Image (cartoon, rainbow, N blue to C red):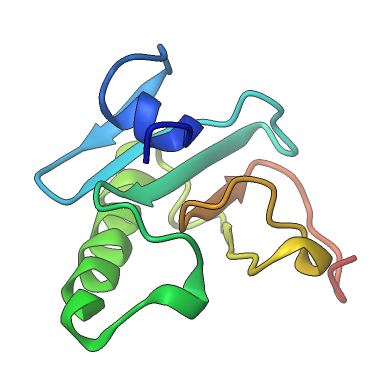
Length: 114
């Protein structure tokens, strides 16, 4: 998608602080962090939201969660704890319509989430 900011980051058209990348996933620091550690994990394939995931895309989710696991160990936050957030559509807070997960750590989180 030519107007998707995350696709532009994936394609290196827009610069981002990339912390992880493999064949299927790219992860970069959020430009408006809500925690000391706040990284976005996106599939390289453009999928607009959770509602658009198809059976043939299931491996992408597997790869995203494995990438998250590798990254939290790399940054030594696995043991202290972290939160994974995925928003679907505007009322839930999705601002960029490219499937993504927020991984946040480094502070105490409250529940229920707001």
